[in-house]
Image 1 (cartoon, chains in turn purple, blue):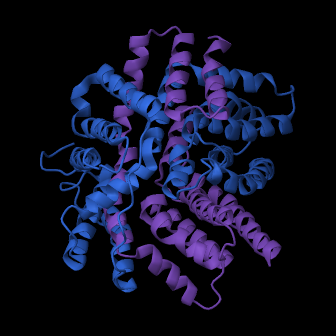
Image 2 (cartoon, chains in turn orange, red):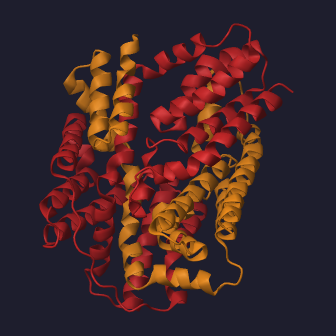
Image 3 (tube, chains in turn green, cyan):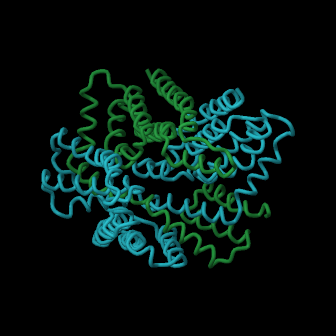
Length: 215
Length: 311
């Protein structure tokens, strides 16, 4: 095995830095990596195609768009903004910290798909966050929307591993089992709690500091 | 798969294929989009993948991906003009409809477990998501009384706004498969082991935690990084040589990887897709919003490894 197979990683980094079209960069990286490992083009294309077909479930989420589009056409985003504007004491920090807590708790119960960027962040959380933050410039409005998406990710990632039947826990259990170490899923998931608490504390502190800087 | 009547991935892919096919047809008819045929071909190929991917063969699917990439890179996808918004309806009704999909996903994930003959238990969440979409659409049509094509039109407009980013997560997962075949993981593992000073427990903890984060950033996925780093450092050094608690080493190692997921455009579905969905000009805006949380959190995770694994 040679270091040459790492050339695909270099292609990815250079491609992203130079802002080439990302799908093109990904295919180029796959081709370079495969060729470096001595695969022929036919085998590389077939391997890529097989994995693409096996991971179609990732793209199923887009079927929610007709519902979201319909609701937005009849004013969902506007109503979400009005709801926050009418609430006394609604601040960006409180809104995002509350959402993160809810996301962490539900993910810890295994309910990872009840929220997400298409289902909840775009139609609800992002407009609410904008209304609560009352951004002064379009650039600040973009930053607030990005923070809303970031908060969803952080809540999800540092909640889901507390659930015993989530994919990553089963992966770890399977790996350790192969090495002769037998653990119950609960032994693993309980050690996700300190990091979950730390994620909540760090992100909340950041949001609070951001608000204080602007006050 | 046991019974033929069981609802599973096949039916969900069928529905998704029909939705993408509708997006393709509506794109082709959108005179306000200068690149309407490129959009139509792109969503049409995705519909083909959903409807007939299992019959195209591995090489055929590979060619389909190359065609998608060709359209995105050479022609590019376009966007049509926005239709004027309808008069806003009552907030209560809209919010109620908005939570139909999450609630259906919740109810189905919990409930379908008790009907293993009806719904494939492994796919309960995806099936309930699809059922939730159908239910929400039915209720929305009955209450709002839009033109029949309106939901698909509006969905297609959102889809065009997302553009090629919609298939990036699937493509990156496929790149991971090629990396695995080429043995990238083994080489990275050897490199990581080579840089640890002999006999340094702290060096091993640092290399394991930082290595999980860094290799996750490359692969876009902590699942791909974990077996590599655990086999190279976690198991031989932290667990066997220094007698660390395997549960702590595994669990917190994985979470160090999750910190890496927050810092990479390679985790496209979490970091690039929302930038497109939220109309952010900077494709990396979500990553930038996450780095100031992810870095201190990575340090905390490495400290937790150090203090909890070797009690």
